[in-house]
Structure formats: C-alpha cells, structure tokens
Image (tube, rainbow, N blue to C red; front, side, top):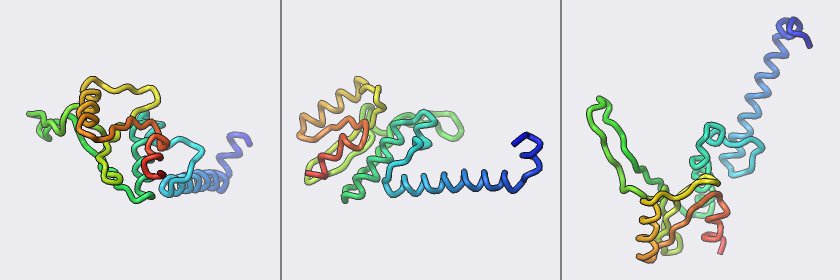
Amino acid sequence: MSDAGRAQDPAARYRERLRGALLRGVERAQRETGELVARPEPEQRRGRPEAAIGARLVRYLERHGVTLHRRTTGMFRTIDGRRNVYVGTPGEADYWACIRGRHVEVETKAPAGRLSDAQRKFRERIERDGGLYIVARGVSDVAGLVDA
C-alpha cells in the first residue's frame, strides 16, 4: 500500500496498533507465567541482561517454593545531592536464599560477565563458612538446587 493509501486508511493503522499491543500483552503474560517468549525481555533490549536473568531466577525459584531475596548494594546520592549514602557490603551477591537448610548466595552475570575482586573475596568467605555461592547466567545454573 502506498503512503497515500496508508494515510487514508485509519482502520488499518488502528488494526496494526492493536495487533502490536496484543502481542506485547501476550508476551507479558508469558513472562509472568515463566513461559518462553520469542523476543528478549525489555531489560535485555535496554542492555540490562543481569536484571532479566534475576527476574527469571526469582520466578523459577518461587514456582518451586523458594524465596530469593534481592540485595541492594552500592552508592546513592541524597536528594539534595550533598552526600553519598553507601548501602550493603562491597562484593555482596545480588540475591540470597535458604534452600533445604543451606545458605545460598546468587550472583547474576551476563554471559561474558566476570566477578570483581570484591565479589571473589565475598564468594571465598561464603564458601569458607559452609555456604553455597552460585554465579548464575541463567535458570539452569540454579535448577539443580530445587530439582534434586
């Protein structure tokens, strides 16, 4: 259809917008139920693959009765911008849980992501104290904890 034809056919434009909205709604429902979707999640498209991995881990583990707790670490500025507020301990993992009586720390990483020095030191402390530290690049990295 030519540009002139498209401009004269508001019903076709409406159907295309409706189709797009419907597809987005289906994808959202599939993500919420844990089903696979054809398009990557919005976090991945925005360059935040670790956030998308974390969201999938939380959904997967909750379906298996495990609560994965999110940790916030880093530095934030006060609203007036006068001072920095530090939260958490450098190197702490992104998530923690207690699975079958064992303390588990989960650090989400993109496929090419690596642990920082502070994260490696934190992992050593957790493992030395009998905890389990997992670098998760996907759900398969934690599936063995609940499927056993």
